[in-house]
Length: 123
Image (cartoon, rainbow, N blue to C red; front, top):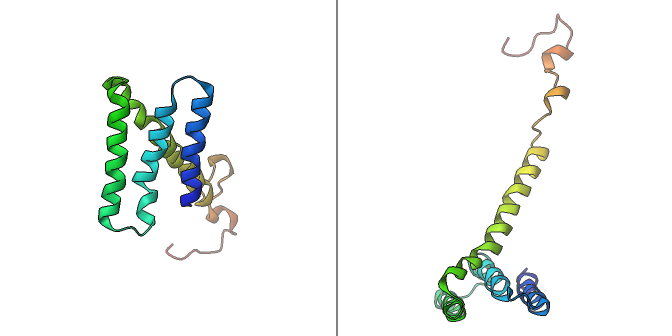
């Protein structure tokens, strides 16, 4: 999983650089932010290494955006927010389909399927 997430960081950044629209920091720091938030904790690194990775991430972002204007720094949040929002939406769709939130038009109560003389537990 680490290789896949880290490869997406390079791929997204390089595609943005090749397009020449000057959005590469948004993709580089967005995907790096996702790595820092979620992936680095599964690598089994000591606490000091996690802080070092975060310090490199934060220092690099501050350095790059000091020349681009601080207002543009909000672009770092766009990629993680979009990815996590999409994840929650897909999880909701999956949960509602797997856990059987039935469509109202197709839902028939069990008592309507049984003969009238059959008693259900609790009635």
